[in-house]
Length: 146
Image 1 (cartoon, helix red, strand yellow):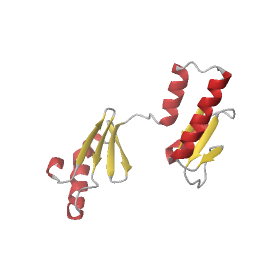
Image 2 (image 1 turned 45 degrees about the vertical axis):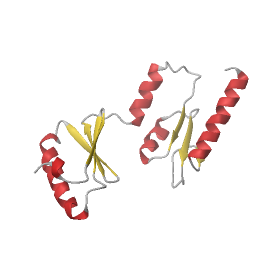
Image 3 (image 1 turned 90 degrees about the vertical axis):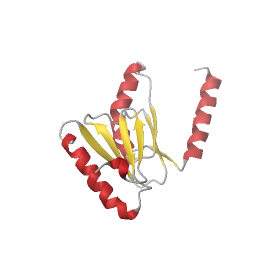
């Protein structure tokens, strides 16, 4: 029983995360794939790894918390964010909601996509609108020599 024997599996090394895509696995083999996958990873689940799930993909991650919120705080520290600085955070995912909540009132938070309910202050409909917004912002900053 080896995952490599299942036809249609794609392994992706994302450096910190290792993804196992199974969208190309045939329906008859799907149950077998999940059984072998579970058996393969189960000895490591308690201490060493966590499994994230996406659309027909399992992501094997180290068992440490390093979400978007932690990454943003680290970036702010590395960039030596000053008192008067503010953050612009744009996101389209459920995982962005924790970041929207964690930012200060002066920060700019933008949800992209059909807004169900979001903690972001503003909404943009799609990536094209994000591009327009960023170009506008860039032009405005360029004119003020900020």
